[in-house]
Amino acid sequence: MTGLTARIRSSAGWPMPGAVLIVTDLTGRQLARATSDASGVAMTEPLPPGTHTAVVTAPGHQPVAQLARIAATGGGALGEVRLEPEANTVALPPPGPWTIDPAHSTVLVTARHLGIAGIKARFAEVSGRLEIAANFERSTGYAEIKAAAVDTGVGMRDAHLRSADFLDAERFPLITFAGNGFRRTGGDTWVMPGELTLHGRSRPVELTVTYGGYGPDPWGGVRVAFHAETLLHRDDFAIDYNAMVRAGIAAVGATLRVELDMELVQGERLPAM
Image (cartoon, rainbow, N blue to C red; front, side):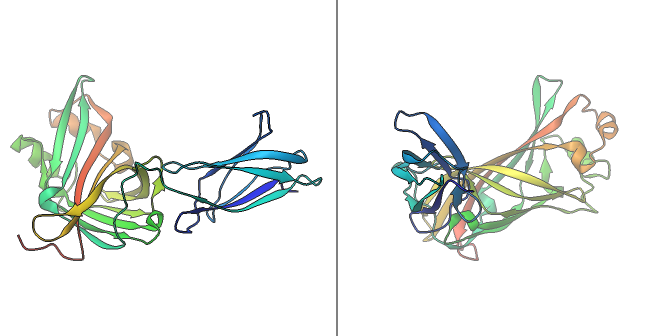
């Protein structure tokens, strides 16, 4: 037996997975809670017969409240519920290809040292693209970073990081990330799951993404900005701790913080400047 069902959609009519349906009685006591599936359908367990209040919420969207009439069988249907974006949400970029501008994008990796300081490595050469879908949640992305472009500000350390002890840049010249979809967590914040390939190993990774908006640039193009972060564990990618000791950077923490500031230009090619 099922209880109350709802088909939850965005304002544009796309299914909204991860939305929450809460049912309360008329005194405000919660009776049920359900999360929508990949098709945007939320379904509670059977409910007491009568009239209740149903509230549908999702990050970055205005909640919707409706009366729900439950039959003697414990079931009922709200039908289609559309959620509007919050008023302060920045407009999403237009669908189509967007190309990473390496001159205005930065990849920074920080490792804790002795528990009190951070060793920072910058990767200067990054490229890739984002395919924005009409339903933004279904967008995909790909980025690649040249491993040999690592820069910590210390030449001898950089050379060792490029060696077979660490990144092994000669055997594995590219660090890549393939992202598949976005999951909204707030007005302008998202999570992008994907697969990171580093040092010859591939692992699932989730990027926490903050969207900065889009607009025209001085060169006649249109740009979009994102900031993304994630945490990596060096053991997942076979980074040798003993080699780190030999390199003179012992007591580096097992977790690496990765920050990406990305500008992308609308279209398949970067404009001439």
